[in-house]
Length: 91
Image 1 (cartoon, rainbow, N blue to C red):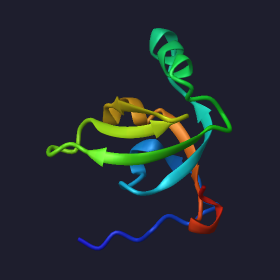
Image 2 (tube, rainbow, N blue to C red; image 1 turned 180 degrees about the horizontal axis):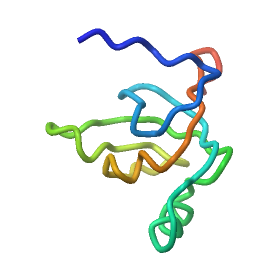
Image 3 (cartoon, helix red, strand yellow; image 1 turned 60 degrees about the vertical axis):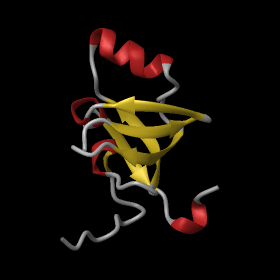
């Protein structure tokens, strides 16, 4: 399967990132306690987040957020809107 890299200015969800890709959080669309958990983990607009490791069955995925490695299920990651960063914009 040939997967094209994301266009840096296009918006997508965190679930669309491949390991090694970095993005900036644009919005969190979760509701209730799940939204509170994501915000408490530091997933707020403007935060950089990187997809690190994908489990053998592709769910969950480990993401690096503010120096911490957290695991999110695909359904959770799909509620986080991000803007992929180009390689030259990554730290």
